[in-house]
Image: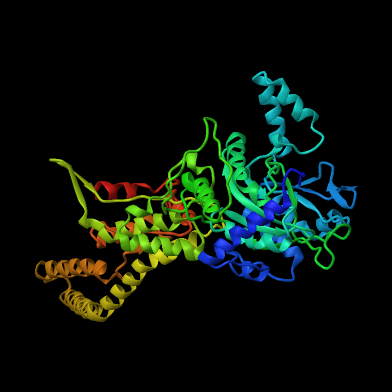
Length: 528
């Protein structure tokens, strides 16, 4: 870090923040305490497994990750140099044992937090720049000797760290900031800093730059390095040893905390204001945060729904948990807090459960001769491993528990009567067939109508003998149709893994090479 940060002032500011936090909340001050709060447990004593875990949880299978092992000595510190090596995530996971041995040359090793573009993507960018007459960008890409900001494929993370704060203050500070900032990972650098990966998920470089600038303007008084603004920034890769310049007896770079879907307590549009007010309340004079048009006005901070991406303030509103019925809203907030997932995941499931609970009782007569059913089709999308099942299952369980109790009651009260009725009809049909055989067709006119009536009764009884079901998941369209018919065209089609439901919808079981959305549309319209 540059000398423009006053170490004594930063230490004093952080001490104020920690004192304030200890008065108002529990502060996790050790690696063990923070690791216990990790949404994804980090297995102890498995250096190679740490980077694999980080890769699986924070990146998609086909994303490209750049690592750097080459270094130059600058005084007593190793600094990265060169372009490094780029791997597809799954290749990196599979070959990490051998890659780590060649990468780790004594200086530990670095990785770019943000995925980089493949060579094909870079060549496409060069061609596109030339087509639009942007020769400067094309030249930069052609002549680049290393990875630059132009090579970044996704503006996902920003590095928050301090090289000037005493080490014993850094982890408590990050533990307090976890309650305000969406921190996805914390890594010990092996020397003198803990590095926090703050989730940004910006749509592009401009949005990333704007949010990072606002973030560091607030955090700089706490000794946070304000120069980590470039998306191609290198961070320490967990699982490697800093043999040359590491901290004596504690030189291994290691993963301390991992949360792929961090939750903050404020909507994104209030996040920076909430952080600034927190610092003011703690007695730290926070910097004015400017946007493209001027200084941010004094905020009015209220509690609200959780979000996972800083730039959502400009892109989309937060999930409106507060408009749910108060009991369901409390459930959603509790599930989000316990599972450390966005309220939107549990909230979307809550909407589906409430729609299922209302069922066919909701009918909207929008015109004198037009009736609309109270159907809800909702699909919550999130990356693999971000807690979809953990967030949705507890909310949906209330409906599943009711369904289980309903089925058990049906088995005890109705099934015995229905089985007895079926046995009687079967016996009746058997007798009629026997009489027809004995008379050799002589009594057809008398017996056949009675036999046909018995067969109709048996057919009508088949649907009643079906075990009742309020919900369905991996089923054929024919099964869905039978369930809808049995339930008066009301059912809850649910899957915490949307892929299952979507595969059914897109014709997983169709023998005619067609999609099966028709049954859903007919249910919505009320058609048979």
